Picture (cartoon, rainbow, N blue to C red):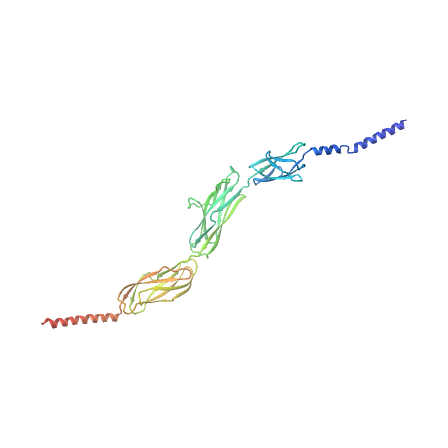
Length: 376
């Protein structure tokens, strides 16, 4: 009898162990899973710090038929697999984003994350006219605006200013007013409003004659880890300037009628680059002869000159007096202003004696006539 009871106890114990080990609650779990609504936010991460004022909120719900609401007013429709995505506008500082999912017959579910929008400090440098055209010897002036991008009410920064120009170029940085005050740094307050304006002024050395082209000027502003760089460009255009001047600084010369009379002039290139194929011409009284030696200059470099001999020959019967001749020079690139020369014409010596003889003959004739007819 005891053996039978012992066997029965073992059977009962075995049945209990088997019953405990079997998933007798699977159906209840399935029913429970069908009643619970799940939600997950995949982006952005909780407590994320961003430097843009807009983020993309992404997530997934376990029931695609659920209505997803962001911050209580923005509804987002999940896709067939339950995923959803939308853009969120952030305010400066910490932003709490609450996402709620609801579906009929199930308990609503919510999840909250925090995203901090922080403005990244940076320096913005702009110029309305980053390229300025000048000729050699002129000053290129650039108006530059500096904006310190950062949080309103933040701490002001002092930015060191450095402008790098080509070799042998002078460069200065001044306030927009007064222009005669040179500066090497500037204090800027953070924000998004109007920045501070400065002037960058540069020019090649007075003795330098740079070739036509573009010359960069690099402006750098630095305050710790915040810095900005901006490239300005001075465009040198060719300056062509040709002038004619007398070599002895006299704008008059004597000349004898019927003979060669020499007068010297200089053709000067006061521009910034070579002038080619310079030819000479004149405006003169009728029947006058004017010749240039040489009569042509093939090339004349900048800051150079050449002496030209001018042969002025009035006709032999030119009446003594003052006359004006006009000399001009013209190259491929430019022409010189006209040069007016006053020519004082004198008659040859032989004609002077002829005149004297004629005068004496007239006087002698008058004396003869007077003596002869005076007796009567």
